[in-house]
Image (cartoon, rainbow, N blue to C red):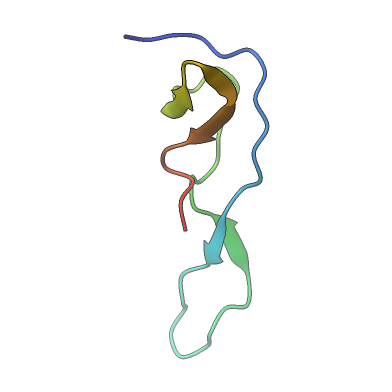
Length: 60
């Protein structure tokens, strides 16, 4: 079932960027990658308490 979410905010979980050659990168990138408006993402929520929703792939 696909539902549409019109407003949802969650802090992006960051992970270290890919290491280039021998130099360790200090950059961090979002686990979800780059998101675009209208892109489909999986949101889990409790139907009785929808404010407890979270993005499935935004995990540590």
